[in-house]
Amino acid sequence: MAQRKKFWSESDNVIVPWTWWGYQEAGDNREANRELKEISILADIGDKFDTPKPEKLVKQILSIATNPGDLVLDSFAGSGTTGAVAHKMERRWIMVELGEHCHTHIIPRLQKVIDGEDQGGISKAVNWQGGGGFRYYKVAPSLLEQDRWGRWVVNKDYNPEMLAEAICKLEGFTYAPSDTLFWQHGHSTETDFIYVTTQTLSLEQLQALADEVGQDRTLLVCCAAFRCKADQFPNLTLKKIPKMVLSRCEWGHDDYSLNVQNLPMLEREQLPEQDDLFADAGNGGDE
Ligand SMILES: C[S@@+](CC[C@H](N)C(=O)[O-])C[C@H]1O[C@@H](n2cnc3c(N)ncnc32)[C@H](O)[C@@H]1O
Image: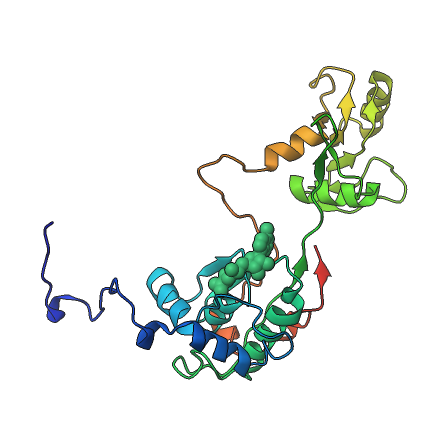
């Protein structure tokens, strides 16, 4: 295997990461446990986390893989070390956690980071003084479920309003149900609307809908099934709900592009102060 020797003067003042990381630079599990105890994360429940990572280790990884402002995803957040370190390193982050320790550990931990109260871990090394914020969302139940024959159907947990709102979000419409027109659940423009129903729509029902929508407006109709040709009405686009939802799921793709809306997108200069914008941190906005 060929090797290339590079002199410091040619190296842009950066050191290529070593393949072996000792505990001096990356810490160890004992250090990670101590860090969690210092911020009272383990006080009430004993050593809940079998393999906590020291903040130093995550810092090494994030230094190699990311730059300030980048988005760091930890979809199995555990005690929240990755998010805490990303935050202190001025990265943005998304953490996902299904366990109750999301409330008992991760949220209190990140609040301490934001308040500048957490002076353990890498805080001293990066001169962490607090700042920033986060939003907390509770993920809704799956929109679809399989019935006993393995067919996809709308989850029974969804009532008509929740279904209409969820489909609006998936299709890029603003959810704004009309008080007077039963078929207006949302809009994408002033003349383009969406109607969501779990019914099967007959030819007569669709004809009546097309007449009411008229020539100057268009309507996306999301229903269980329809009894006509898909392109029969020029002002209606007809879609079947389980199929249209499944087509939005990205299983089996090479590129799992993450479409997360409503993220805080502040300019860097605005970041240091803890901001009212994040006052909902930890307060459980359901999404
Ligand atoms: C080993 S811990 C994660 C450790 C953490 N990423 C770290 O670097 O220290 C795994 C976590 O994933 C959570 N988890 C498991 N399945 C999950 C799922 N489907 N969605 C979200 N969290 C999940 C568990 O509750 C547990 O807290």
